[in-house]
Image 1 (spheres, helix red, strand yellow):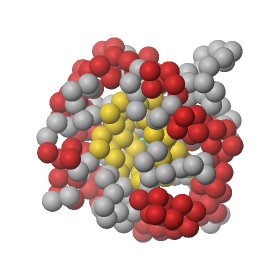
Image 2 (spheres, protein in one colour):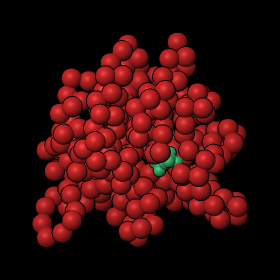
Image 3 (spheres, helix red, strand yellow):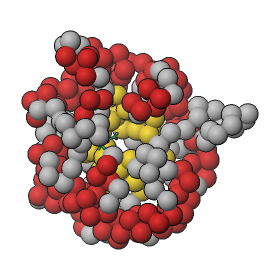
Image 4 (cartoon, protein in one colour):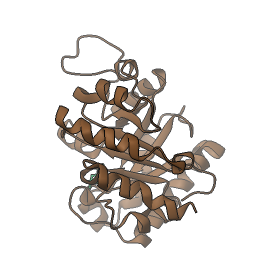
Length: 256
Ligand code: PGA
């Protein structure tokens, strides 16, 4: 955790979920209604097909709804793409950009991700910018170099603590059940904090840095307690309200 920074517990449903899954969003929206919501933010990013209905379901709840990607332009001839403005029009508040699955599947590079984050700002969305090393990069001792380059390349100069969340997701920890050691996460987050603080000064000291990669109810408390870990980006364990709420609930103790 970072003193005076409100943590964010965010779920990324990826390409999972149909209308039948809206019951889970309803349960999450109810489940986050207690006092803890004053201290911890919660967010679910369902597939865009469910976005508009999901925002309506969470309308009277502190649960925020976001999207998993956006195009860098506002509109135009880009078949299949969705703009940040369209997400905002559906009452989405956040958009994930640069997830490693998009960097791999769609060959997205830092420059494109930066442009997407800028388009998110223009639509008044909060950009969740994902970075993280691959297994071979970690094994060859290049983790911090990779994080430095990705932060420099994908985070816009206009980033602030209000419009940007960084999500550190080691690629080899996503969906694998593997996580780095507490010491490794601590080192990576301290490094990113120093990079952000040196580039954005006060804003960089307050910018949230989430950890993502196999966060589960069973490890959430330990991971969320690490210095400079300001929440989680959760894939698999965010699909079920019970698991998501249990991870969110880890903050009951941490913020007590
Ligand atoms: P996971 O995914 O929690 O299933 O490992 C995390 C992510 O990709 O955001």
